[in-house]
Length: 149
Image 1 (tube, rainbow, N blue to C red):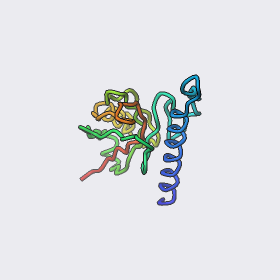
Image 2 (tube, rainbow, N blue to C red; image 1 turned 90 degrees about the vertical axis):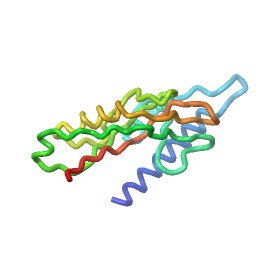
Image 3 (cartoon, helix red, strand yellow; image 1 turned 60 degrees about the vertical axis):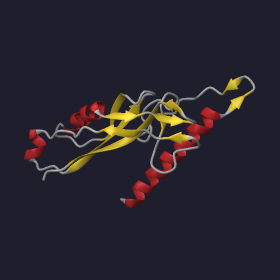
């Protein structure tokens, strides 16, 4: 499992560096047009609209968003009965104001917990990510953990 996480971190870092280089390159006529990439589990949203932000170094001049308030996802009766203790991974698209534009499930869990993780992520609040001091829309993965105590 640690090798998988390291590989995911490396892929996310590569995507950020590639997107940053692509968006910051310029020609005499102005910035080069962004070419949308095929959605992946690391960057499931349009990478031209939402800059991918992953673990590790984010990129030159980029500060990632910070959670202001996180809403805990609710258990379903089916998950409680099955004694589920696990996580759902969701991808979150954050706009320039720090609001949540969209949420997609990257690693599902079932038992109705996927929808509850989406609902909790949509209600969470963030500070906007910035690049060179200006707010920018970003996308990143968020782990929503379900634990019975």
